[in-house]
Length: 265
Image 1 (tube, rainbow, N blue to C red):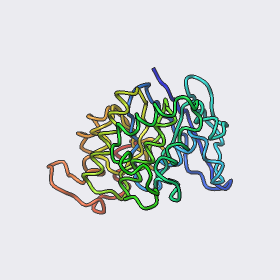
Image 2 (image 1 turned 120 degrees about the vertical axis):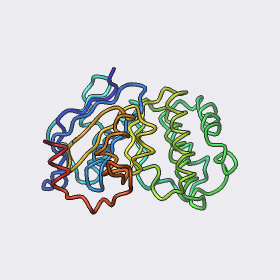
Image 3 (image 1 turned 45 degrees about the vertical axis):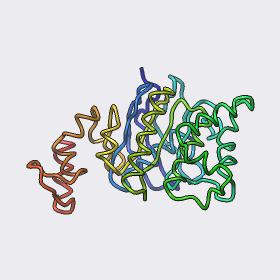
Image 4 (image 1 turned 180 degrees about the horizontal axis):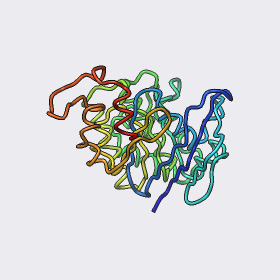
């Protein structure tokens, strides 16, 4: 059963720049779905179109449909989307640096009844013990990994049905990335939160995801089960840096037209 369905979506910035060109994808309830692609492919724009954040960046959906729980949500405000259960953790974390950890978490739970605050807070601290240790610390003085934990914890405070994660591994050491992805998996399994994940770390994302989509120039060019994409020769060559023989290969060695021809042909 699809929780989210995006159908033939087109998005334009500043009434001129066409970023999404008929994009379609489905996210099953209770699943982890990943969206992969090079910089500029339109991954973050896709998330912002779903969460209602396009308007703040002079972007708008000019055609297509976004269905959430079988209801169209194309022109909802970000606040209304959060109340309906969609929460986006944006690239770059975007925490409130001058507030403490606990004050940041309180902001995340503003759409929830006040009586649920303590329960939700303890839930976040169970997933992220480090945040409990630093609950009275100003968020701006935390490490990048701790800030990413805080950004995800703030999302958990909103009790989302659909969690949109934009580049959670950005700028983090490999061990921290592994820890954060492990927690995302636990949140998905234990809380039943559906996850749509945008990532540059293709290997980690596909290892985690039930299903994956690969974008190029505003369109989906390939999709399939996460495990199938992880072992697909084209994905290995262009996103994992491996040739068909298994040896490392530079992305620059491959002509763009060859990739387009094979994937779209």
